Length: 153
Image (tube, rainbow, N blue to C red; front, top):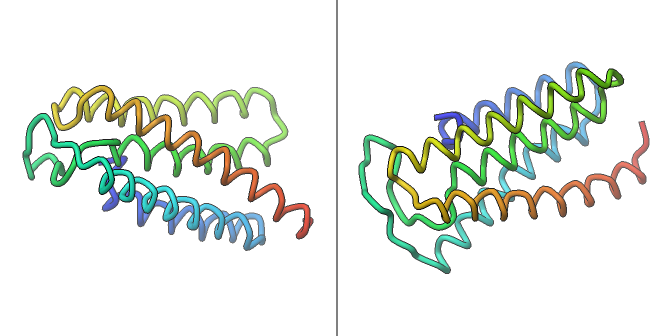
């Protein structure tokens, strides 16, 4: 469930509100929300273009629709990856940065692996979700950096 839209939507909204309350900056929450939505839209665009069937269809496992790329893997990569990137940037302690990165990577990895183990995605679906999510993060962080240069602390 940690990669599903039913979890990620409230999580992203709550994270955005918390980021704003703690840091009193609007750019980061908006970029987190916009990035999560943008990653979701990209995922659905790729799914519509490829239209690959799932290895099994089980509505109880939140596995309805097409398979490639894994939306859970891609959405968790984008959402947790963006949040971790921003927290790492704001954290001065090297050990805390390391643990934020490790925690985000483990969470993202476990979400994707669970989709494969549950047989609702092929391994290539999960790997593609990670790949497209990572590419999206690189582009989105570049946009974020350009906006931060125009709107300093």
